[in-house]
Image 1: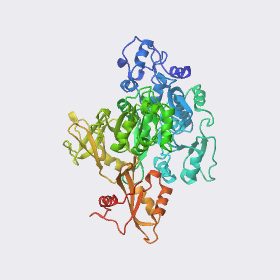
Image 2: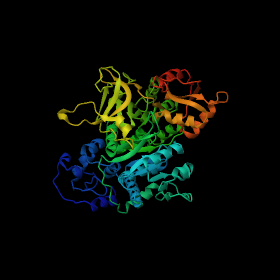
Image 3: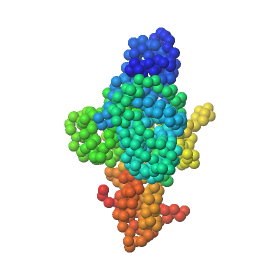
Image 4: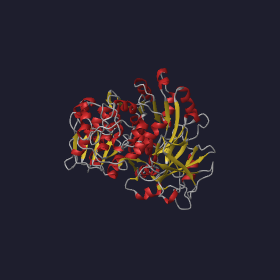
Length: 608
């Protein structure tokens, strides 16, 4: 760490000598930081102990996830970067285009942004929304919010203004970080009531005459991030928020089977435990260079950052339009591993890869849906030295299972076994455990179980329930996530996905609410009834079929309805097929019979 950051740590600590002793015997709030002679767990409000260089070298040799998790010293998402800044301050932490930040610089920028939020009097527990593509400012805003105890709300950059407005209102965000172009697209209607909008570029916007919004500029938007970090590192930071790991850290909005996107509440503990768990089974090291290709509003996308930082590795951001963009950055940045969803892997399996990039990739990981066997086989041939990881997870519990690469050839359709520090149960409707090969609901128990749905206690009570496992001695049962996914466990303990037991659509790695699509169809004024369905598809997981009863069958044009959907929905939610009917079947309760419609719609899906 630089002398400036070391002075920051020393300014608020009590330093005393002690004899060399094992790390495990030290107090949990005095864990060593292997830099110079200061043993500081935090930059800022910490206590430190002088230790020998010999002990520091011994500690520095520990595998980063084991060092961090075993020490039990982290309480805040920001600590992942801050600890790495203690260990290896000049190691590369983040890459975005031509911008490169060391861990020291990234930590300094995060603290500087935390000061900015404190100056705006955005209090601990209040929400900061971030509507940007993957860039330095996106990550700094997340880290700064965490350091200040503010809850960050990353918004998928492909969402339309209506969806963004819903998230801003539902989360109650007091500040939005975005670009001037995106702010113009959102318009005064979406930004109305937002106290602060921080623009990441040098441009400013004049608010509408009746607006209560204050537009602010990012920290020196025209200056290189590294130079901005160096300037901020020379000033003493404001005190860090006094967070504990159980505090709310982030809201990740995800679609369910019904209604608009809902905010999943993630604690600092969820983010930290998720980072350590995934970094452990992916065997991340400080030498890895991990590509962050998925949206940071997606739990698996955010995990690309957290798992990199848990190991002191480099995270490389990419906003791609074509598969060739991913290949090019893998070559340029010497990428050693990354995760993707099936549609991306299908495209990458067909792309032209230089031999050097193919040989360098240490692993590839699939999440967000089943990877077809032919694609998996093609990827194995394309990357002969890479270990394939087939993963399953849901936002409500981060990662749940993974298939060990050694088992992929024997069980390519399996979702594997529980990730580290999780227990996966397969239960019947009454909560009793299923027999081997019996289909039941997947229930996740463990440290990555999130806090529930934001401002939705009724839905939380349905999905987050006590674990069906009894505790010895009458101890309270842990809260578990009842996934809604039907699985089976074979005789060897490996899990296999069977189906969902609700109407949710899983397409292109996204969980999609059919009602959101149906609302747009009804609002078009072109249809009397509409039902959106997911139909199995080799590349997408499920394609989206919209079955409608037109108001006027003679004049109805499917392309007109599809165009209306494209105007109001993100690309991954636009129906691939629109089928017309004179009436829609209903079940005995009077509800649309989605099972019958899905069976019928399977015959209507076009080749994409």
